[in-house]
Image 1: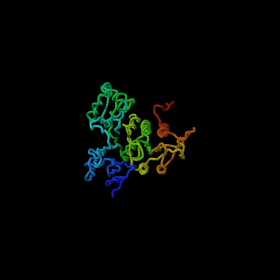
Image 2: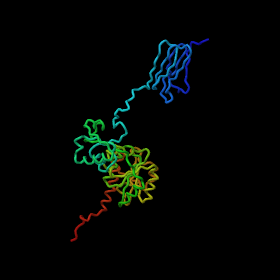
Image 3: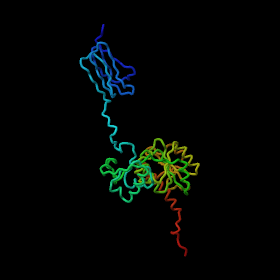
Image 4: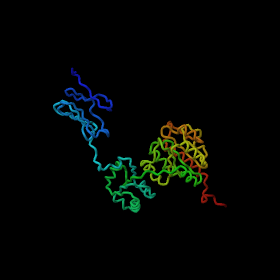
Length: 354
């Protein structure tokens, strides 16, 4: 004796979902007919029974429908939310919508061109392309494989999302990091070198500002961790305003081990901390120095603090408990530079003998 209650049909491997969608026939109930597309669903899946009259077509995101025969008089079509209008393969993707490392502005792009930085593509207005400062460098970049697009300012507005591009933008190749031993060797080629270590700086604007200040003060390089920190992105390059073309950066897997390697190379490790044991202006900075800057929110990690020889702090008189990471780096770097300039004697300024 047949029952009037509908029966659910479950296909093998079908995942459980929330509320089922049911299509009723005479004695057929299809539970959860909408499925996500899977590679194995190339062929239609048919459930049939002798005597079924018309099909019920269930459309998923696949090219072919999944058909279930019932006894309904008319076919019922259910369209899946997975079905979307896909863009044509030849659609021009907006350059800034990708992680394509776009830099813009005359000074950053000019610095990249002068240092023969790897550039994949350059967008430039016709007026600027034949400017004497850019013309021969653009030709040289073209010889090195860069694609040169002469565009209108409106196109540059689209690429840079309305930023102040000054008539030029470029897609830079991935940044080429230096190995830590090479950075140490290069730094020790000068007297009293300074290396910056960024312990978990995640804001690319902060990292770019630190690089710009460090290069301007005369530091020899930067060390950043590979994980949980910003790398050298287009934003970092833009904020650094050309400083990266003359400033090496090493990216390391283990920051604590790298600090030990720097110690073995003769560097003294100074970490900046709000609760540092020594006020910045009371510390005598001599010899090879590593200045460690903590992250924006957490500061120096406990493991990094234990790797430091001295913890230094910047005395604050107001109610603000801490400083921006790039501002703290700039103040510490200036104090190091100030002390060393005081110990520098200029022959043309020495008092003349009577």
